[in-house]
Length: 226
Ligand code: NI
Ligand code: MN
Image 1 (tube, rainbow, N blue to C red):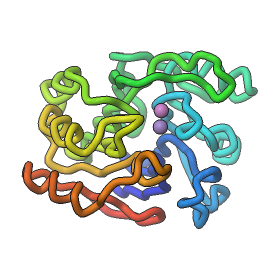
Image 2 (tube, rainbow, N blue to C red; image 1 turned 180 degrees about the vertical axis):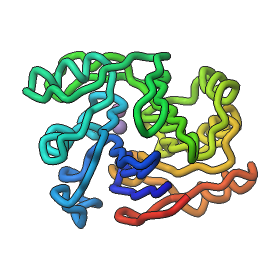
Image 3 (cartoon, helix red, strand yellow; image 1 turned 60 degrees about the horizontal axis):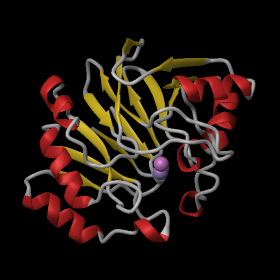
């Protein structure tokens, strides 16, 4: 499995023979200005919720790549109204077996509305089970006790967790979330992009290390093999 960080909560992940792009927010992100979205490939685009910092480039990337968009019903409905119909709508708790692996849409404790104020459905996360790895992409979320269900049901090899606080859980709560989902390896997201969510990297590393959990804070543009 290959993970490429595109800034904020946006990742391109090669898993199960397909390229999955999560929460595209690249062109409005000054930290990601080295990324050329025209060069990005995707077979699927997964969107956790409708906030601008998760969906900004979704339509353009979908049109460029003709990727299938996986998101909650209300986001797919909105995309259809924008003229993009290659979507697969899901809702919280549901699973579907795609060719790269099985996707379960799970709860995120967060709000969700489009930039124009229209309703974006409930905020979500994804658990993806493939023959290679099982991964959890939390989206924007507070620590919530439902994460214990994820740990009970799945064997999570790698988790993508927000760390920046203010809009989501902070590092301390992300450590608790890691324990609840029973995952030893975490990639941080949703930090440093805006002033409110700047984190101390060394302190975050130390907090995870104290709990015996590996935290990776990727550089934008960096790719790692897992
Ligand atoms: Ni959000
Ligand atoms: Mn966000």
